[in-house]
Length: 448
Image 1 (cartoon, rainbow, N blue to C red):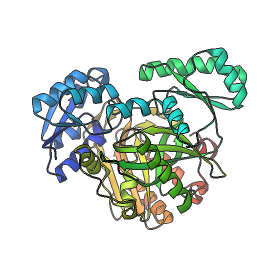
Image 2 (cartoon, rainbow, N blue to C red):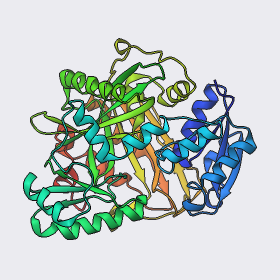
Image 3 (tube, rainbow, N blue to C red):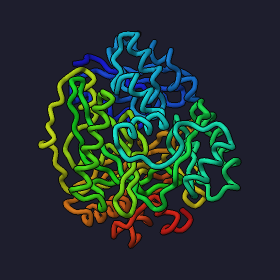
Image 4 (cartoon, helix red, strand yellow):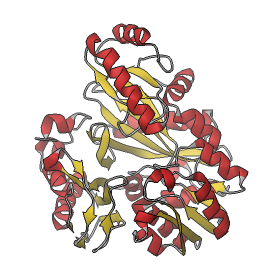
């Protein structure tokens, strides 16, 4: 087991990793930008090292500075969290060449599965259903138009190397193909340094269902149940829950077995997530694989009792997976609400500022993962996520009631947040009935 781990990230996920390490009796090193000197993760870690200026390009994406911090501090492993360098195969390769364990999958898996077009082709080759679309990336505008006409509208253009809704455009007719293709390529280049895009048939009103897996270095893998991530705005997840109201035991088992088959076929190691779109007839299609811990890993932890960060660390250290599929059970229902520094009344415009009062909710079945405290100044340079509110109940109805109570208790003063927006969603009759899909907010919530 490791003696010291450097966390190459910031905010709530850095705090989350530090807490897991402390329970495993592993020393931690926080890294921070100039703007994050007072962030909570720097205060909780055993050591904290400044790695550059506020813009992430000079700090959290600065590989030489992060490697130097690891070497100076004597760390023997690096946990990348999510975002930033978590799915950068070159970073994983550099860690390996510097005799530092990368707490995540091997660089080769990140490279192959991180390319969505290649991942889709790989899954298709082993018999896993994929959404009809282009075979690989598309650069030629005439070819893109021909593919779109062939598979039928609407189609969706996606960045091959990205996620989070960036480099993604829905095309309703042939007039929109070329301008949308150009826009998506430009956005993908700006966001990921790679302009490659591919086309898929756009499935209307699907569920976004993802399956959590764990795999060790010895060929064993298990699935930990599904998460329903259908509540999204502009392809960015806002609310996630487990289990799904739609999936049920039979489809859960089928999706889980497909996910395990997928990771075993490519020799994948560590934690990962296979994402599917599921239509109204419960037909499922592979969408992508995330080769890292997910923001919403918390709901899986809550219903299974398994600490995914600890499992990541153990698996990276080479330990045998100490879980059989029969050991994994889903207990109750969990929902996660992402609390962002955004103004729902102003087109969800992100806005930083000073937290004048921070009072998180508590009580039975309530968990808050956050890096906030009263007096903390939220910088404008990074993702707008402030906190994750996770609630658990014996039933979904109890979890929803608990979520409403906890959201109503949650106080963050000094800047705009999405707390009231989540209260509106929780009060929505269709949400309470579990009738959710990826365009739920556009159809059911005013001004979403």
